[in-house]
Length: 487
Image (cartoon, rainbow, N blue to C red; front, side, top):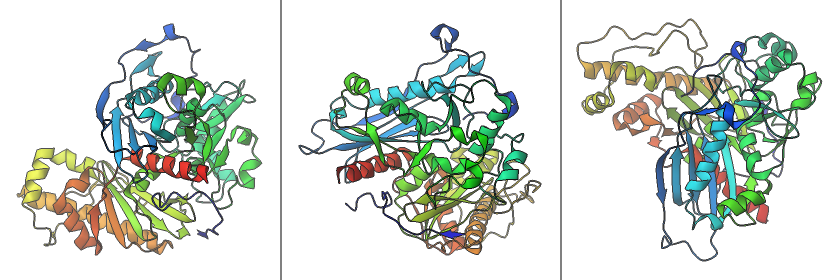
């Protein structure tokens, strides 16, 4: 546990104050030379949604806008906001499917989605964009040529595990360090280093967001301290630790700056192609989960965000840093505070095993949330839990099942709420700031009866976050970057 000593830095906690397949490292394959005839395009980037203001939308003369883009697990989004945080345009793109040797070419897909989103920004709003930032999935890793920026290897996706590298990493890193997980960025780097022979001297490690931002600003080798956490960067000391620097593969590590810091101006060819202003800057990014937390605007210690999606993930703003790989708990730096998080395997995916969306809605309406369910479950899709109970052999417990579907759903919802409460209590026991209020993101935030159940079980105020899209959080980063750049 580490208390961070504050020093002047870019603040992005208070911006208004001034489905991929699970991969494995054994299936790695070198990228073939990039020639268009080697690729088969299966689908084009398809716009899912585009909402734009018009010229009479109330934008004042001289007012600037701030563009955030989110590259999440299932698609890419953008949000364009003004300095008050009002959204003027937003949209989403599916990742286009490009195949290379019967495998998904994610690099080409991400690149296409990026420029599709830029194209989706309304033409009349583009000259007003003052800054751009991007978030990407945590621990999605690229090994690129440090001179050209082109990938030397296929990307290691966020959910890939490299158990082959774990013994090496554990032998050099402190016990229970964040990197001591097979899916950490450092394990992916070590796994690549151990198998590759020819390209080591010219190689550079970048995260997904780093690489996408490089396409916009053209300066290779820059990352942010949120993305760099899982490669071993120490955000408390603002440096890579000695145990990492002493390793031969440390030559691949990028330089690290604070999220939202201006890296440079948007490249001239992109400004010309899309019609952005010549003073538009590109700012360092963050991870998708951090951007989603920023979107909720939970800015004070004790404020937390629970994401109720396919799984249950919690993030708590704390004055104390907590890192414990035994429970998958790690802390991201947010200015002079820490965002402590963990993720359980319980969540909405379990509900979908038993109920359709329509059933969930109708059955929930019949639940009395003020009445405790006598049923005691541990809802999991499969064997194994990581947080708040670290037990790979934990068996799902979803029986006995009552005859009433309403009672069964009530029991599952209440049991997930108890797991959430246990998770926040664990963070407190590990030394984090005690949770005082919970904002909810994800599909589960829409279920009002579940919210009331959680309020009763947690003994805390629980509400739906007004903004939950990571793209909105990335736009807030761009706003803070522009404000800091102009100082």
